[in-house]
Length: 51
Image 1 (spheres, rainbow, N blue to C red):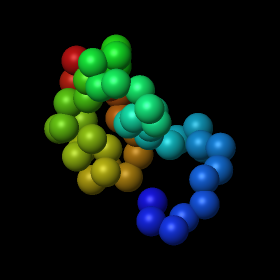
Image 2: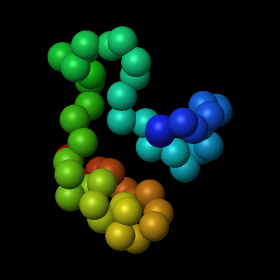
Image 3: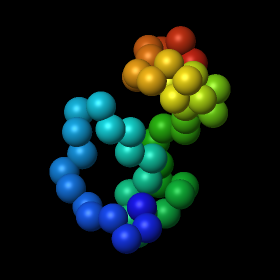
Image 4: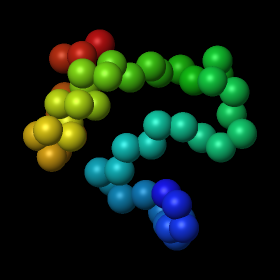
């Protein structure tokens, strides 16, 4: 966010990265289709269908 305020994430908030954490340390990789489908549906879908 540019110029925004940071707050505690809502339960429906997607968090894609953690500050200062190397990329190779992430345990999960997101399928771009999952993200696109969630945005199109305007809700969090079942990620198990995309693994």
